[in-house]
Image 1 (cartoon, rainbow, N blue to C red):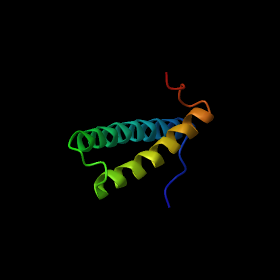
Image 2 (image 1 turned 90 degrees about the vertical axis):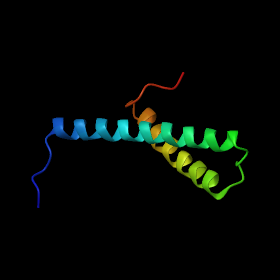
Image 3 (image 1 turned 180 degrees about the vertical axis):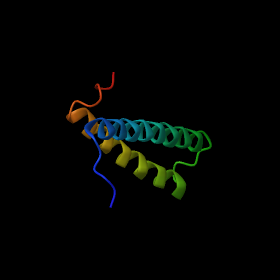
Image 4 (image 1 turned 45 degrees about the horizontal axis):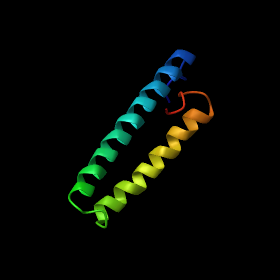
Length: 73
């Protein structure tokens, strides 16, 4: 079993996780925009990306709810 994280390590881990979620959200949104431009909004891939984006949005909302991210403009 590994040693427990220090508060600074936990904060750094949360910050890395937040950055990863934001990057994934941006990538997912870009892929969706590309598919939409090709007229493929009804494709299985688009729908899977849409579901993923909903999940990522929910995670980002939790960050906002707990004051860990400023609200979107």
